[in-house]
Image 1 (cartoon, rainbow, N blue to C red):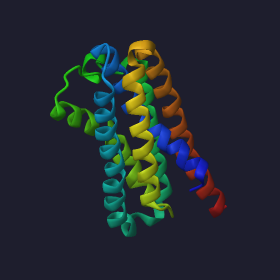
Image 2 (image 1 turned 30 degrees about the vertical axis):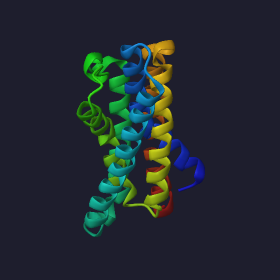
Image 3 (image 1 turned 90 degrees about the horizontal axis):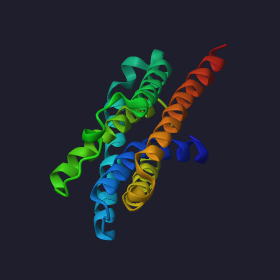
Image 4 (image 1 turned 120 degrees about the vertical axis):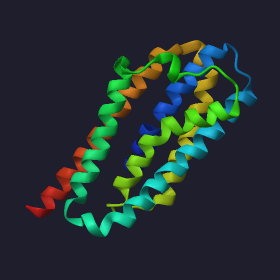
Amino acid sequence: MSPIGIAVLAVSMSVDAFAVSVGRGAAIGRPRFAEALRTGVVFGLVEALTPVLGWAAGVAASQYVAAVDHWIAFALLAGVGLHMLWNARGGRDEAAAAPTSHSLLILIATAVGTSLDAMAVGVSLAFLNVNIVVIAAAIGLTTFLMSSGGMLLGRLIGARLGRLAEILAGIALFAIGAMILVEHLALLG
């Protein structure tokens, strides 16, 4: 995967965490810098770990699905992208998307909830020749930066910008899945 592809993937995977962080920052009012950093660390670590778990599961199953791996990668990436578009258009409960509690347990649960898409993407990455450590590190660092910044910017920009970012990320993931499918089918043809 090219550096640009990794960057697009990292930003796309981080948008859910950014949107939730913006909501948390807006709900808290004036989040302290330490709270923003804590949010970034938790979201970043969880978001970096989940694609590795998905990748490991995908590697374990790859020998059984090698003939259709490009379709699986497309379906997972496109599905996650479409799900992000659905959420951005209002398909989720905003109160559930942006918990206001400062509890570490609630923060971890929220981070896991926003990172399930990264696990699905990790499964699709198992069918490609990629360095999962580099990709996971890029996703984790990007999520850390976007979540910490989202907390601090939440009061100023509110949920509207977070929703726009989620729409763009959904489109980007769908496009990445489509490019994988087109590239593979072009190699066969």
